[in-house]
Length: 320
Length: 300
Image: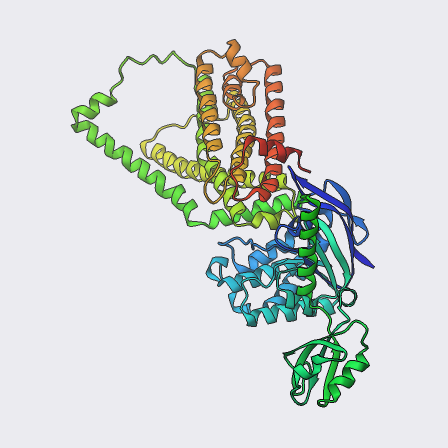
């Protein structure tokens, strides 16, 4: 089932077109990464999904229903810049936001206890927000976002301001939510985290949809088949390998298996097969790991967004 | 409606628990009374002060009637109430905007509900303060009357005239408070960390003072054309209409139109300010121009 369906969404601010006919959908229970450079239209898109803004045209459906504030109980939105009442106590703040979402106070309290325990905030429940550290304030913000048990959670840069330990903790909590069937839309510039956690990706730039779909499919579609990664037990004689045969270029890199060894990234000739490459390398030493190199999310992101910039420059148009 | 009640009760309870409320309620009046007593004592011994405090012309008690005085008092109270609480509405809205809470609230509650809740909660707090002052002042007054053996004219206090006066006073007071309160809230929505757009606040304060002075004019000239038109215009009707209605110089149909226009304008201003509140989210860090305000109204 699709929890979110976006169709031909446009939004214009004066002379700036923030969204330009964006369409995509998100399956229930998935973790979807929303990516794009600064000013791409991500925040506008998230605000429309959260019903803060209305689109100029196009539609948004949440769980098959036309979107609006009446569906706010289905959504939990944590914006990039946090917002809490400084003078409120932690538990009052969490309960207040939960009650505004229309949730039952008893259920809210039970969920709040669960999250306070998860984030080690039990002893801070009576403290005022302004008395907490920035990291703990962000934890409270996350709990307040989740306390009404939304089906769709939107997290805008959730890791910003967290130290590595708390980032890992947050990642665990997000994975727990995912395992319970909650759909998560994650907007972040932290590519490794997005790559590690997300099944689906939506990439926007200048208000246009650049690509969307399953992360594995996107990587597969963007892979360069001529690039290979291999690990050998002993170091290779690189000039000898590139002097002739199927290998165009080879350079040392990290070992690509859990076993100790010497890692290489190599570029094969277009007409060469993987078998020919392996045979050539095997003449010099034992190969313990071999794989076709898939691009990282960061590489796809950079390639696609800079590619669009060039296209725009060539066409002499400004789309955002 | 449930959300409105929840926000109002939360805002009201938070403010009621704050130290500043109790200081403003009990310490400031004490300081004012102490200052008055000090001036009183000083004037007895000081030629300069006694000359300054002396009336320049003999008073003429027949100048205004009791009802006119009551109307004038209503206008004065509304102006003072708005001056004090308008600034509080402005600050609360501005704080919520600069804290970025508005972005979270806007995912749950429409802008106009947020704004109305702010205006109502600050108003309730103001009334709580007045109620505490009346309770305290009344208790002291009763104790003094009892101690001095003075009769309290209960018949005058609970007469039909007094009740009708109170009713008109309250109708205009609430309408005027929501109308001007929404405008102060809109100013807060347009302001930011750097206090940009404070000039809108100055404009509203001047309009409010203008309304007050027109009201004072209407005390003596309640049946004039100027007073009649000003009692229909929502910017001036909270004071002028109130003074005329309380003093009995306003026909019932004019009162009805005046009140309808005032409440209509009040709720339209709430809707306008609410829209501005959520739209201004997008314009952070930029000084807003009148053109931006028009763009906000067009934004969906």
